[in-house]
Structures are given as C-alpha cells and as structure tokens.
Amino acid sequence: MLSKNKITLPLLLLATILFSFSTWESKSLNEVKKIVIDAGHGGKDPGTAGGKEKRYALDIALRLGEKIEKQLKGVEVVYTRKSDVFIPLNERAAIANREKADLFISIHCNAFKSSHASGTETYVMGLHKTEANLDLAKRENNVILMEDNYSKSYKGFNPNSPLAHIMLANYQSAFMNQSMDFASRVENQFVRHGNKSRGVKQAGFLVIWETTMPSVLIETGYLSNPEDARKLGSEQGRDNIAEAIYKAFYSYKSDIEQNQ
Image (tube, rainbow, N blue to C red; front, top):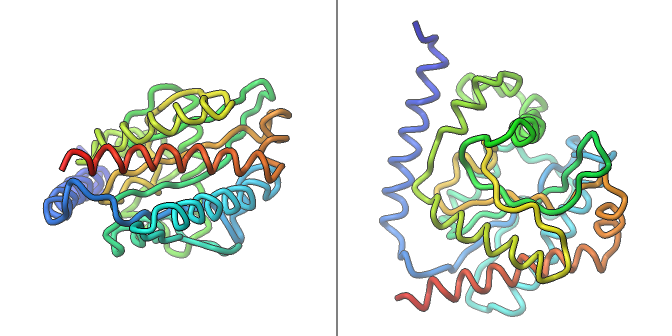
C-alpha cells in the first residue's frame, strides 16, 4: 500500500502540470518579454567550495541580467536575489510564477569528488539518467533542510530519499520542449565561447520543479577542477559565461518571435 506521502506527491505534480497548461495558454506563445534569473544558494547556504559558488553564481547572474537589460530593451529582468541572502527553493519558483515569466534560469557551479571532472552542464526537469545526475540533484535539493518547516512546504518531500527523487524526476512539465531547446542553445554557446560542454541533461531539481514556464539549471563549471576554478574565479571567465548565456537567450527569443 502506498503511503500518504507517496500519494500526495503525484497528485501535487498533476495539479502543477494542469496549472502550467492553463497559465501557458493565457500567454502568447510567441513572445519572450520577461526572464527570471536565479543565482543559486546565498546567505546561510554557501553552495560548494566554501562559499565560492554562491558568490560566483550571483556575479554571473547580475552580469547576464545587465547584458539583457542593455541590449534587449523590451525584456524585463527579475532576479530572485541581488545580494548575499538566503531564498528558499520554492520561493525562487514562486517568484517566477508570480511574475508570469517567459523563462527561468538558475545559475550554479558544480563540484565532484574527482578533480578530473570539468565543463558546463545545463539541466532540464526530467529523469535522472545517471547516478551522478541523481547525486547532484540530491546535493542541490538538500538546501531545503535549512528552511523552516520544509516538510510541510514541500508536501513531505525528503531530499535524502532516492525514491522521492525518482518520483520527482518523473514529472514532465508542459514546457519540456522549450526548456530543451534553450538548454541546447546554452551548451552550444558555451562551446563557441571556448568552454568545455558536458551537454544537456535531465534531473529532478526542486528549484525548477514548480516553475510554470520553460526552465533550466546551469552548472557553469566544476570548482573542484583547477582549470574550471581558475576561469570562474576571474571576472573575465565569469563574463565569458554570462555572455554565452546571453547569446543563447538572444537566439532563443529571436527564433520564437520570428515564428509569430
């Protein structure tokens, strides 16, 4: 017999899917007018590498937003955070939903037990294809343990349970195709800007679970790798990353709006 939590999560996912479709139907499919940029971690949640992740992610997010604001005057940029503050994962998604954003981008830095792992990865919501993807999602989702009443806020979701992540990852949103399209553009631009790409992947990240628009989570490099850490530790390297994401956004927006 299924437990109450095992029943509640699928029902919650179904409700989210239905809400996503209704929200999307009320908007123009051919416009990208508002983007929410989420700098991962912050405040009491340092991320990886002793707090470097939260600082680098914020810097990249602000650089990306500035490029969009300066070069695409018709696009409104909303940030989940602009300083070193802690924002719960569900609130990050809620910000994007309240703003009725057309795209949600969450920016992070990666780490691994081996220093040989390197390169960028862009994730969309979906199945955990590898054990490494599952481990990454579990590490990023564990931040909810820092939140008050996290069990109530996330309907009994347990970030330490592999089964919970598998159930969460089975959620396929109404925006998978658009998310995959944008994610592919991001990774292509990373390569064009001289970065190593590990490709587009799928995993169950809570921060993009409840968003009702195309959403991606970008891992901009491995701080456990000396070369990646050097790039991300420099202003030039972080600007390179921001520029690549901006170019991906520009092409994504242009192609969607040309199909009106």
